[in-house]
Image 1 (cartoon, rainbow, N blue to C red):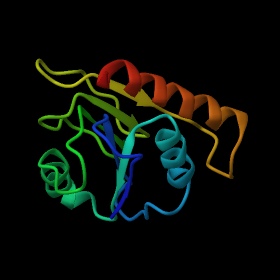
Image 2: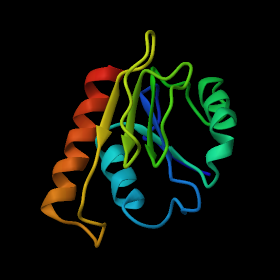
Image 3: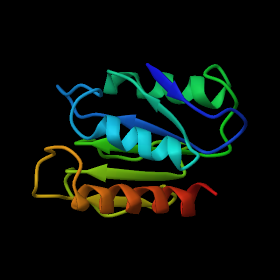
Image 4: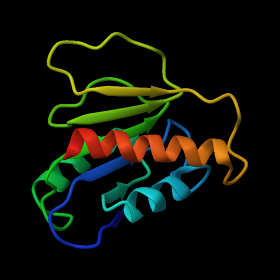
Length: 136
């Protein structure tokens, strides 16, 4: 698990890679750096099954300051998560929002990650703005 924060209470974003993927590969490191530079606490880990444990530890202050709000980005990961105020799904199946569910930004890109590019910079900026609006 990796926690990046400048200290102090701030919104946090938990990054969940897809099943069979590693969080230190692909676009995740660049996205995590971009979110941290934007002022979010960023938590990453290597097992989607442990998301509930990570959220409990984060909201309980076990990973540093208690965040002011929590968002999640998941690649190939969908569904609602209790206590989360904003969700970004990347490459998940489209679905209709359910009552009481956190707002969801659904992303799809046809160009696979091959390093930084204007297209990915635009998407990273969109995610930072999305979390900024919903976690403020």
